[in-house]
Image 1 (cartoon, one colour):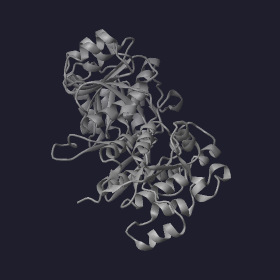
Image 2 (cartoon, helix red, strand yellow):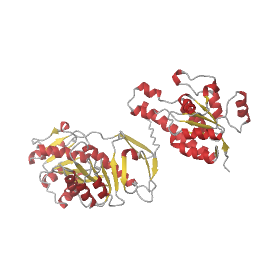
Image 3 (cartoon, helix red, strand yellow):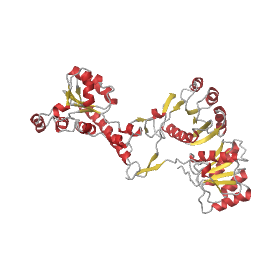
Image 4 (cartoon, helix red, strand yellow):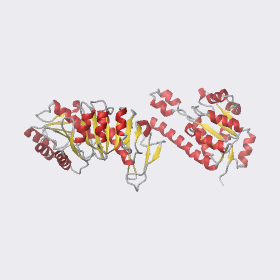
Length: 510
């Protein structure tokens, strides 16, 4: 049988008072003695409920501007004593220490203070000392004490004590101890990461307190989880729950569209983390039509994303396609009703939230960490490598293709014309294979590559790619440069009237 224990006393000291009143009133109803401090003590008194100030127990006032309030043997002795230990019980009596059965404590909002851009001094003052110590002490002694460390757990705690007239089981207390160590470890990780934001200490602390179990992982025989605040980033208006693979595609789509967020109407269609269609036009409707033309076969079951609110005409076109996910900054009411016509279609509104600065992935028996590729190639980055220079239209297409190339799996070649993705070669073991794949796809969907441009995620070690591109009709090329044999490709371009620009930046995506 679980050891049930009825509480007779509680210590409450919280920063956030929301949701606390019903618990305090229940304590009053159950005859549980309440001890408290500072603002929480005043809050309870204002409810007309008796409360004993911690200062009356410790015979010490709150000192050092509130930095020291509860750090006292009479408080921690009341929490940490072992009630099945005769010596501990005797010392409580000897030193007049009250037994504390319930500890309700939360922590100063350190992460919110950092995110607000507050001064360093304000941030330092939000490093909780007493609260974190109380949580650790109460959670450690879960055999005798129940620790409630977050207002998110108030409802569950209130239900337990209401149902059992103030009693908790050992299982209850151990469960809440786990919740408490989750809070304390996350808090310490946030503080460490603040102090180590330049990664001077080669240590990794990753903590996500929000998570959900997915239907399965990449395949049905694999378990899968997502840890993060999905609801902060998206409002899901319709459709089934996102799968592991959906989430990967959504991530790829969001990162790609960030390149075009403040530009003309742009629509992208992705499949298996790569763009199979992308176009920028004067209207979103036309952008979608031209994105779909890039590869209407691969678009089946894809993820769609755009940088403008979706209107009725665009929604009608989308509705003709079977797609898993549609992502937009918003939807006109009539457009939303059309898109809801497929019951499983996932419809997301993308909210503006800060994206992580670093990328984390498992590797061997450890973890790889890197800064995200924040570099987007611009006209000012380009060096003309050939006698011929790209025209204004070609230059726009080169930068357009470069953005897509950056978000396409290596080895990759991207072909574009008039701000439309004609085709790409993705994830090939050689750049020649990637180019041949892209040309074959473009031709199969009746693209005229004469006057199109080519983007490569890395340099050309030989002139073979520019020669193949030239024969397909490509007239301008963007690439990082950096090969010891760059001149071979430059010479071919000069001899055949092709313009080539170099960015100096490689965009591998593995």
